[in-house]
Image (cartoon, rainbow, N blue to C red; front, top):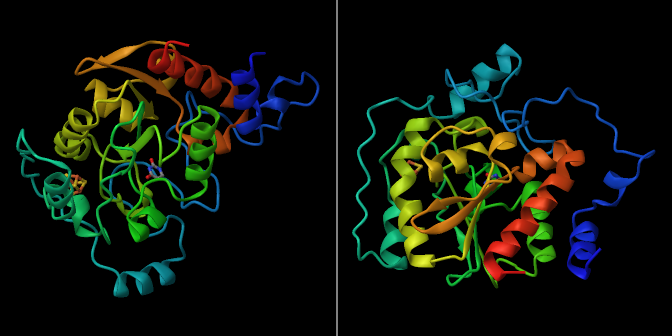
Length: 271
Ligand code: URA
Ligand code: SF4
């Protein structure tokens, strides 16, 4: 193993994956690429996209009624207004526009929009799905358990939120109940991501999971199929890998994520 590989293996906790007789237990049935699956506790469950779910799945009816009394009604599905980002929009203007955006239904129940964070001259741009509850509260992407794994992945690549990496999402506002963002929501929010790519000019874009890949590639992909390919977005190479929340539930796939990170590193640094 090269020193780089040793670091990645250490940082991602990959060691046991390669031990023939001591593989991590698979407690749950594995979906095709697992992305539709809910992330591991203590993160809130991701639920299937439609129809809009009640505040908490499987909550006793009484509790649901009580919660509805204090929560705003489920979002009203009205046609989304198109987002127009000025071609000369700078960071301040872009973030101001995102924070005040009401173009899709996701604005209705957010605490705040989460534009993204990181090095504004990054080697890597990482694109996730959408803010969760903690991100919605704090205004920063990937601050829960999946975020800790993402930080470890970045550290393995010699990157951090402070240096070398920028982290954004396919939608900037939290989907209620942490459901998967709808195709129309991803499409409506897309001009913000496109402007972020223009301003950041990263050497590589890493799409974490299906909604990110869908946003950047403008079509639905299965992660298992798209992994290993190099796509292009506005002239920037794009690779697709598993979402960290999926990896928390499916640690046996960390080895594949490790391969993907190595490829991202080759693309960004030529190593
Ligand atoms: N998952 C995501 O996809 N994005 C976040 O910001 C947090 C969790
Ligand atoms: Fe606007 Fe995107 Fe938030 Fe929808 S998710 S309201 S398009 S910023």
